[in-house]
Image (tube, rainbow, N blue to C red; front, side, top):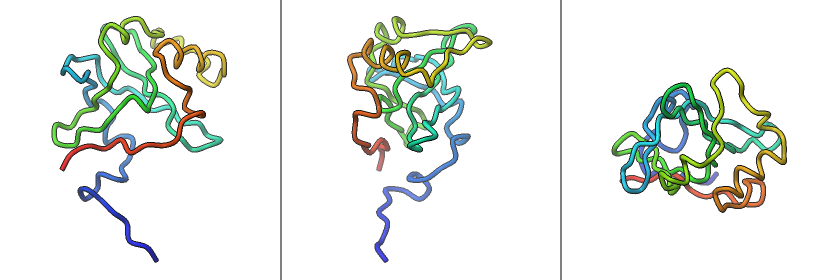
Length: 129
């Protein structure tokens, strides 16, 4: 049996509810909103989008890979700039897009200058002591 390496107790595995509602900020500390949902590709088991509650009733999807968990400040940090975020795909809380639509997904990722999640390798996303 191998030994698991952890940076902090509980930070490597947690329920999605633990971070739901956490703030999402840019690398400059600018607020983008809060984590509303985590969308999972049920075929691969990978998290593919974070749904962000922005201002008003507007929701936004951003690539999961753009986020880093900041355990010290209990928030999520994204490398997406505020202007990029404001120009990304937004949708109404009562009218979600079909996030399983391959074309929709590619459009989202390409608008943010990224490869779709299925073309990327998994990376560590937790930061902190």
